[in-house]
Length: 122
Length: 122
DNA sequence: GTAACCGGTATCCTTTAGATAACCGATAAC
DNA sequence: GTTATCGGTTATCTAAAGGATACCGGTTAC
Image 1 (cartoon, rainbow over the protein chains, first blue to last red):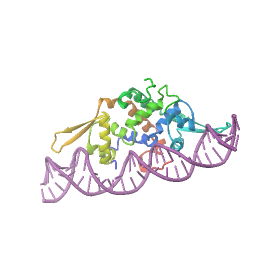
Image 2 (cartoon, rainbow over the protein chains, first blue to last red):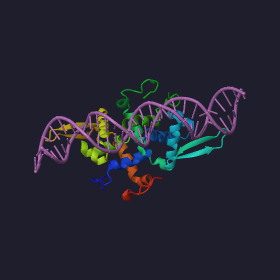
Image 3 (cartoon, each protein chain N blue to C red):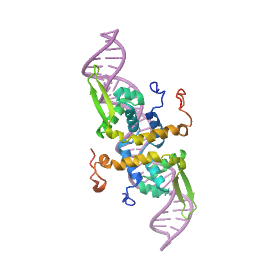
Image 4 (cartoon, helix red, strand yellow):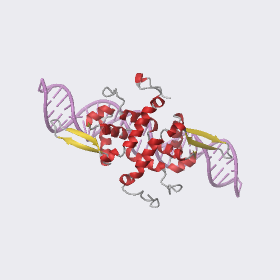
């Protein structure tokens, strides 16, 4: 495998490496949310629309990769705060580029402004 | 859906939109390869290590999104050239950020440099 | 008491991704 | 003829991703 052109670490190899960590449907969405502010578990789940099972799994993986921190707060009903780490902030360029592309080319993607919810101004 | 905090198009929504187009294991890898140079079908398949079935499907989707072009060349054994479009180049920021992150944080990602294949997942 | 919220699991299920390999018609080299 | 390459398609299979929902123990409010 990878016999040809493997001497130079080509771009698409590095991209594949990155996607091993932050690939999938949710990782980057979660990280971008947590880069905006901290979230509690169900609060985050509601915000991005993800089932608790998946969210729990994704958060664990992200924590293992030291991209987020999990903090149990000593409140009356115990709450848990998830926050982006400094290491996560090295991904801000990536996420910034992704979100900007999504905004700029929203029309091209969806065909028109977010259907149904016409209440969302561009 | 999106009752709360939907007035401002938050970052993670734009990220999710983008991932709808270029999400998945292969799309960005393919695009980054095609942004380096053009490829023929099996040549590309060999380069990134993907089965022809998946490659065919991914290329079709990318072509539908006008991110790549498919050109049949009039050579003796017919060859097909795939190339990145101008629209695809608007993704260069994204892919550049991804690949750079992958290179910079390669040790953190894989656990150690690619050589030796002592891939021990954390 | 009931009800609602908290973080998170457990269970079940569907969908997709992806691998493998055979195979097509065409062409070209031998 | 055989063999190989070209760009794909087809079929079959498995593994993984993701979704839906109920539920847990705990606390708080009523």
